[in-house]
Image 1 (cartoon, one colour):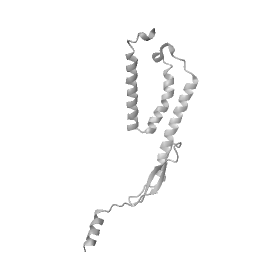
Image 2 (image 1 turned 90 degrees about the vertical axis):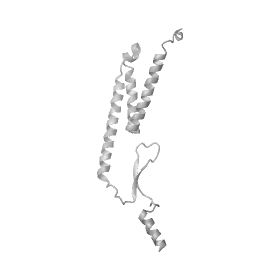
Image 3 (image 1 turned 120 degrees about the horizontal axis):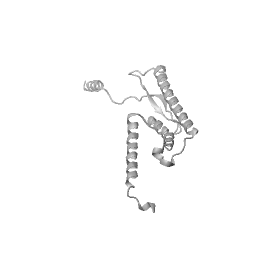
Image 4 (image 1 turned 180 degrees about the vertical axis):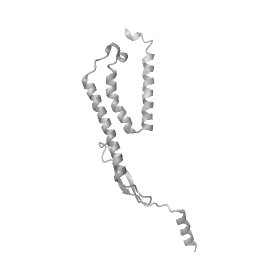
Length: 150
């Protein structure tokens, strides 16, 4: 029985644990130093690259499969989509920095991010009026105190 000879089973199990731990650590690092969007873009590339790993005789041995043209077309479509996404983000940043004036220091508006639905991936930035602060400045407190004392 092949299951009785498991004396070397710790090797693939340990390799899986090490690679899974490294994958999770690098995912957290990408989110920490990049963004969640960057993490999503990296995860998008994972599927075609995993599919291409099955072509390697080093990884798969005799069970390696031959590459299909559709796999490379899928990878190309994903890469073009990621480049267009990044290019669109750069164009949007340039447009927003040129098109809208920055708020003045005393301006009573601020920008907030609004998501219309869970399906929508891109946020909308809207200007809303900032509520008046209820806190008084030290000069105002002093003036009110002197007004009451006199």
